[in-house]
Length: 175
Length: 140
Image (cartoon, rainbow over all chains, first blue to last red; front, side, top):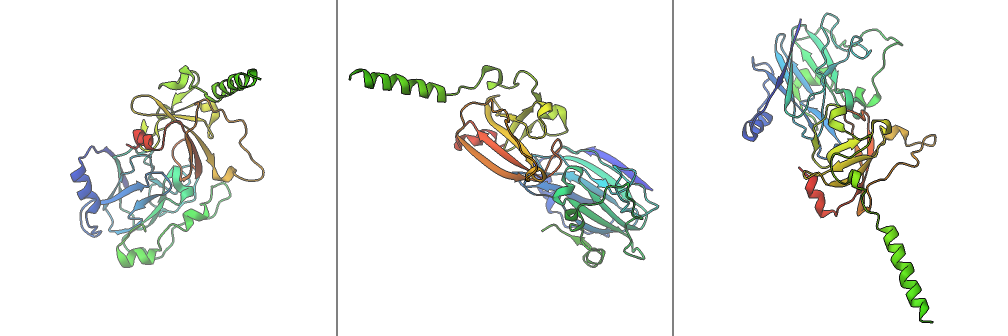
């Protein structure tokens, strides 16, 4: 089961700075924070961290910290924009829709496995992320190939940290 | 012979007036008239984009534009074209793009990763109608 929640956050600069610099401790019961960021001229956009290892039932919250752009958090799944499935078969997909600056979106993941997601307007710029929930028995993420589904562009495929790296480090930051 | 300098002066004056392309009143201040719509009313983007300003576009001209950009006081500061990278190839061209904004002080060209409305990597071609120093008017 996946629980979603949209929240609009109007926060001051001090709290914002504290949030961004907060150390990630992915096995704690805290909500895991992921920020959506971009360069001022829009030439580069990213999720940070780009890879996280969490336990089943933990909540991940994405917040748009890019003052000049909108972003989404969208699971790869045939039910959403006819994309290949890259989340566990038993999990439900999600789509945040566009988040304006300082808006947030949360998902609670209870099914073990590997979840890949992307930003709708920035997939072709390589803005993707990966979550590993629990200790999946294999690195399997994708469903069967289907010609009716839009495949991932190469730049997106190259953007995912490996499952092994995520499990080993717990958290993988964007570079 | 005295006629020659006079004629030259008249000719040059006429030329300069032709070069001095004033901003049409209908677009000099935000919101521009005609088919232009606020970008934030068309797609989910902030109304004022740091580095560019408040953008307006004729939806029929997407994705290239022109996008008209205004500062916080509603003054036109730039005309922007957004050209998808995949369309910059031997089989595609962008010709006769409208340029209604008047005099151009300088031009910036840079890569953009994408945003709602132009959801793919593209190039921004920015015709600045203000000085480089006055770009600060839309910096934040």
